[in-house]
Amino acid sequence: MKVAFFGSPAFALPVLEAIRSQFEVVLVVAQPDKPVGRGLRLTPPPVAARAAELGLPLAQPVRLRRNAEFGTVLRACGADVAVTCAYGKILPASLLDIPRYGFLNTHTSLLPAYRGAAPIQWALIGGETVTGTTIMQTDPGMDTGPVLLQEQLPIAPQWTSLDLSDALAGQAARLIVTALERLGRGDLTPTPQDNSGASHAPMLVKEDGFVRWTDSAREVVNRSRGVAAWPQTTAFLDGARLKLGGLKMAEGAGQPGEILGVDANGLVIACADGAVGVETVQPETRRAQPAQVWAASAGVEVGACFEVWTPARM
Image (cartoon, rainbow, N blue to C red; front, side, top):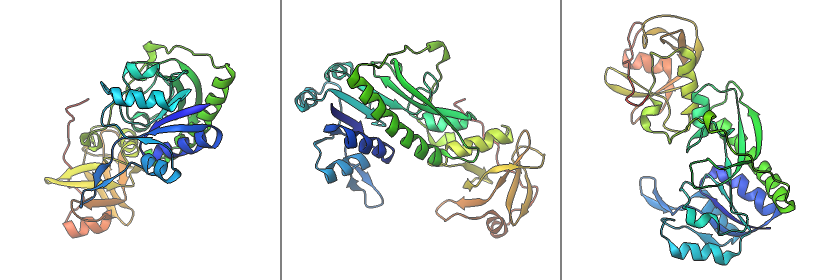
C-alpha cells in the first residue's frame, strides 16, 4: 500500500509515524513555511520538517484549487490512497479521485458531531464527556463523507484541549493503521452519516476565549479547557485585558464577574450560577503570576467586578 500523507501541525506527527511504520509513504503534503516569532523567520510546519528529516518526498503547495501542477505531482507519486490529518486546507473535488482508494480523513470527533476545523476545542467547550476519532472517506463536503471506522474516547474531567489533543493523536495513529490494513483486504464498509445529528466546530477566533460571566460556572470552566492552547482564557477588568489560568469550580454566589474572594489559592469569581476559582493572572506584556500576588500589586480587592462581555457570535 502506497500512501500520500497530508498534514501540517505537530498533532499529525504520530499519525505520519504510524503510517510510515507499516506502509510506504510516497508523498508528504504540508502547508507552506510561515513567518514565526519576533524575527518572522520562515519556519516549516512540523510535518514538513519531519518529512525533510526522513528524506520523504515533500510538497507544500500554496493552494490546491486550480493547481494542475500539484495534481500532476499527486498522480506521479503513485499513491494507492491519501490520508489527511489536520492538513488545514479544503481538498478540491478534482484531487479526490486521483488515488485508487481516494482520500481517508482522520477526524477527531464522533461524526456527524463537531464537523469542522476545531472539533477538540468545541467538544470541551460543549461539556462533552466522550469524544473519539472517525476515519472517513473524504467527499467534497465539510466532513460529510461516509464513516469507515469510529472509536470512542472518554474525556477526563480535568483535561484541557492540550491533553485531549495528545490522547486523540495517539488514537488516530492507531486507528488509521487499522483502516489502511482493512482497506487493503477489502473489508471496510462505508456507513453514510446521519446529517440530522450533525453539529459544527468552526475555527476558533480570539473572542472565543473571552469569559462569559453570565454563563454557569461549569460552562465557564469548560470554555477555559477548550481554549487552553489558543486563544486562552481572557477577561477584562477596568479596561485591562487579562489572561486567567487554572480555572476550576468553586463555592460562592454573587453578581456575574464579581470577585468574591482573594487568598493564597487565588481568586473566586461569581458566575450566573455558582463561582469559579482562578489560580493565575497574566496582564498584557507580562508573565503569569499567582492570582493573589497580582491582586495585591494591582490593588484589586473583594467586590471588584470583571466586565461582563457579551459575544457577537453566539
